[in-house]
Image (cartoon, rainbow, N blue to C red):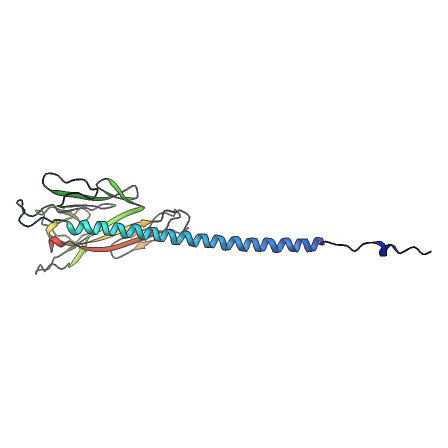
Amino acid sequence: MKKPRQNQMRKKQKGLTLIELLIAIAIGVFLLLAVTSIFNATRRSFDLQDNLAEMSEVARFSIDTINWHTRMAGYRETGFADGPLTDAITLENGNPDSLSLVYEADVDCNQVASGADGLATVVFTIENDSLMCNGQVMFENVVDMQIFVGLDTGSLRDGVVDKYVSSSIESEDEKTIVDGESDEATVAADDVRALNINLLIRSDSTTLSNVAPTLNNDFWSFTPGNDGRLYQEYSFNIAVRNNI
């Protein structure tokens, strides 16, 4: 009797070869890397859009707040016994600038009641990378504020801004109008027709950028540190209504 051949008795081999297993692992790793890359890109895009939206909100509320109080500067009800204000606007030209506004109101920017004279004083400053009003934080991540003074220097005194200068603003009795070349120069408050206000706002996240941007406009240039944040400058003009 013939014995069956050994290869006929052997069962068929099942499973993967080592090469097939390595190929499957390589494909799996490639797909995992692709999915991870897409996830990271989506997350970065979301973080970017979220921070840009937050910066825009900070800018909008900051501009609205400064705008409202600046337009009120010098306001008094008709027939007020003490006459017009002589210190309605005071600007300290520094780095950053600070702006003080006085007008008739029941409360100031922090809802603190005004004094016996019925006047509210509102002082905007930048401290600890925040926009402050009378020492209280209004909005965070506001890094700098630079203010330029719009003057009516024409012979007609028609209330139209003829030029913007970088100057401090003193009380009404200071009558020197300057060209803005000196940081120590001052202008008279009653010559001011408008303010050009520039706010530098940064993102809250520190993982959005690896390049330090340089920001420039007609009046001001700024290069922040390379700290991973986004920076955006917002510039706007405000008419000083009670001086026009």
